[in-house]
Image (cartoon, rainbow, N blue to C red; front, side):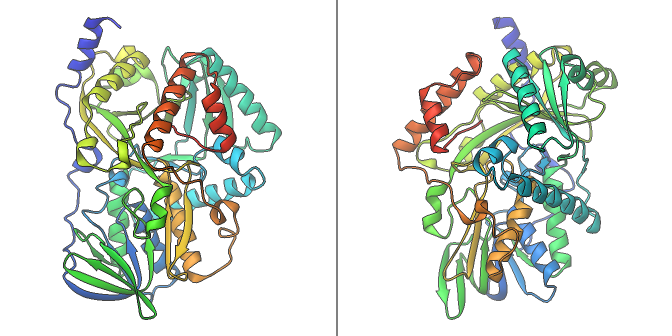
Length: 472
């Protein structure tokens, strides 16, 4: 790319604040006080993101008399739940391709459960009056290379043959550009029903308020430091107190799990996003996008992008950064070299928006597991349940995970707990330096495949056979 063009793109970032646009909302609520002293409850939920909040809310809706406490180490929604793109997908398996590869015998049931879960999210948002800009717009996977267009068409035909194409529509170049005008788009696969767009932080804050209205006691700035048996239940230590609970649900995702053996199953992968200033009517008209769908491209190193309620464009993805040793640190949340790269890609996709500026640029950690979709389990004779590994698609799937954890704690055999996806775990990641080396080699191989017509090298083919992966 020409230096002058790169300089223009970098200039577009000159006013960008290194914070999540969503968390800057003026409606952000004040945090609840920290726990000081002893507490007791029937169910203790650890983690104040989507996973923990859905667990607490569903627990109270199932059994209103159940005494529920929720602990959050910082402020509700400050981590992944307040930094993501706001794509609320029905898929429980990180997309249909991943689900069909891993659970072909269960995929129809998984798709049905996922759509039911999305319906229940929409119903809960309405029932509790949560104002989170929920729009069930659908999503288009777009091809930006000729080989990707052929792959999308072949994939659509395969899904038709398997009876999995309900609600999907293949779009050729003219049809996809009629939806959103980018000269890079060569085809698209439009999922009309299976994805909603929303304001992720407003969803978190709304779930918190709904939980508290139902009687959940929420303590923020209260990290859970220890987990030990205590009589017939469990005890969780905090900096200034302790909670004794009959049962515990762990929704800590990327942060170190209180059940130590679970930690090897996830690694942190840092993802980054930009948010533009609001587009003018003329700028919006130049790109179309009247149906406001979420978009994602088909490369291994892919981008995801969508419109906000005030007509900004969120543009994220591509780089997936794994820090050596799997450490989660605040300094990894900001990565100017990735922001510059994303800005260049943005104007390559939408050259008609030359001159638009970015107001926010941020990053955050995704809890990634080797099968890309959540896993579940129990500990301490069934008194503790956990769910983790959503790999960036947890806005919707965490509600399903909450249901699974509550089923497991109840000792119930349900449609959810009978799934192979729930009963079996992914392969754990190896220790360092093998994890870093393997992930780095996989990232290099994925970039090489994108540059060579999608052709996967021996390393990627081996990972495919082993059921392992790494994605942007």
